[in-house]
Length: 209
Image 1 (cartoon, one colour):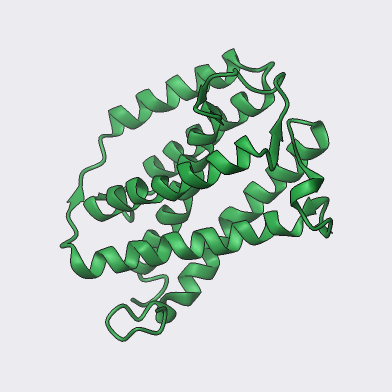
Image 2 (cartoon, rainbow, N blue to C red):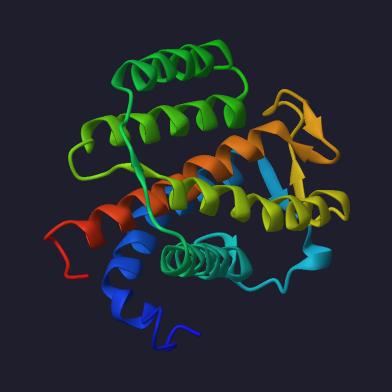
């Protein structure tokens, strides 16, 4: 479907690659560090045993296939929904940054919790600094909502089997079914980062549309 004539997603490949790599480097580094610290681990019963940088290769593939799919969803929705841009409320972003900065410090003894709060802070900071080239649109918001449907389904199986095992000393223990609350912030910050960078690239003169 990436070659479908109306969507022409393949023509956006440079922006897709830049978005995947720039965000992936940060989150893979975080993943490696968290695994080494013992914040979480991967159940050997459900992975092949092949590793890259200390991570199961399946985990590395996650940071390629998932963003590609999400950005494809975004472009597909842009084809069928008239995109409307909303003004970014700078005061709201600043308030959010203060809240997440405070939460990051408050949960300093819980590695995963503190780190996801910091990730949220960074996402809001990037949105604030890129206000002229990035705008929150209805399509971006719908993409976020749609993306959380497979996130909840997949994460349920990952945490209930379990494929991914969390260290109780690294999280608050608050869960949605079997999914740690921190995972929602993790996914939101990661998906938002992919979409922000991609949106900035295709809507600016940095890359042609």
